[in-house]
Length: 308
Ligand code: ATP
Ligand code: MN
Ligand code: MN
Image 1 (cartoon, rainbow, N blue to C red):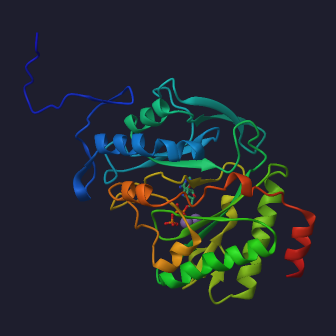
Image 2: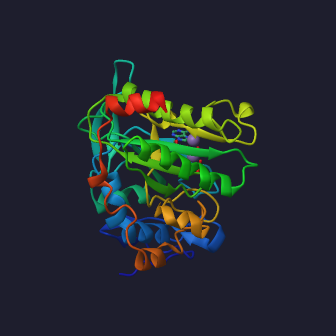
Image 3: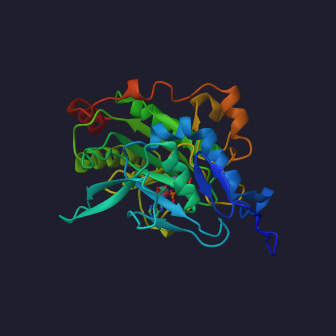
C-alpha cells in the first residue's frame, strides 16, 4: 500500500548502503548543494580521502542544519553514531583518557555525513600510538590584509628550510585563507620533541624575515604578517584532512597541490565540491610519494636548525 504524503516530503535516499535522511536539505546555500549532493561527493572521493582518515582519531565539524545554520566541533564518540564508526581510546594529556572516533571505510564516512558532518579533521598521530606523531603540520595563517603572493612565498620558504634540514614536505589548500605544509614522519619521538622541532622551524623563519612572519598567537600582534601556526603539532591538535569539505561559503575543499601549482596562481579556496571531479580526472596525485617520503627527526637536523 502506497503511503500518501501530505506535503512535498522527499523519500530518503541511500548512498553506499547508508540511508540519508533529509536528502534535499540545502547544506550549502550557494549553488544549492544538498545533503544528498554532499553524501555523493564523499562517495566519489572516498578512495582519496580514506587513506588520510584511516586509523586516526578525528575531530568533526557538524552542522545539523547545513553550513549556514551553526556548526560545532565534535571530538568524542556520541551515542547516536553508526556502528561502522570505530572507537579509540586516547590520552587527553592530563593523565586521563577519552574515547574518540576513527573512520576506516565508506559506510562510516557516509554514516557521518548522514550525521551532519561537514568537515573531517585528523590528529597527527595514529590511534595505535596517539602519543607518537607521524607528521608535522605548518599551518600558515595570513592576517586579513596579507596578499596571496606572500602566502605563496611563505609556503615556499617553509619548504626550502625543511628540505635544507633533510625533510620532505607536501602542500595542501585548506579551503580557507592559508595553506598547510605537511611533513610525513617515521614515528619515533613524542609530541614534546615534535612540537619543539616545529617551533624551531617556525621561529627560525620569523627571526629571518620578521616583517613577513610571526609565531605569536595573539592576533593583535600579527599585524600584516603570516602566523606560522606550529601549535597544530601537539597531542590532540588537528588539521583538516585532504579532501574534506569545509563548512564555509562556496563549498570549498582541502586539496593536495603540486608545489609548481602555486606558480599557476591557485589559491586556497579554489577547489570545491563542484569542481573537484575535474581536477581528480585531469591531475595526477601530488602526494603520490607521501608515504615513501617519511623521515626521522634527527639530532643532526636539530643541530643544523640551531646553526642555520
Ligand atoms: P585557514 O587556511 O583558513 O586558516 P585552517 O583549516 O588552517 O584554514 P585554522 O583556523 O588555521 O583553519 O585551524 C587550523 C586547524 O586547527 C584546523 O584545520 C582545525 O583542525 C584546527 N582547529 C581550528 N579551530 C579549532 C577549534 N575551535 N576546535 C578544534 N580544532 C580547531
Ligand atoms: Mn590555517
Ligand atoms: Mn591556525
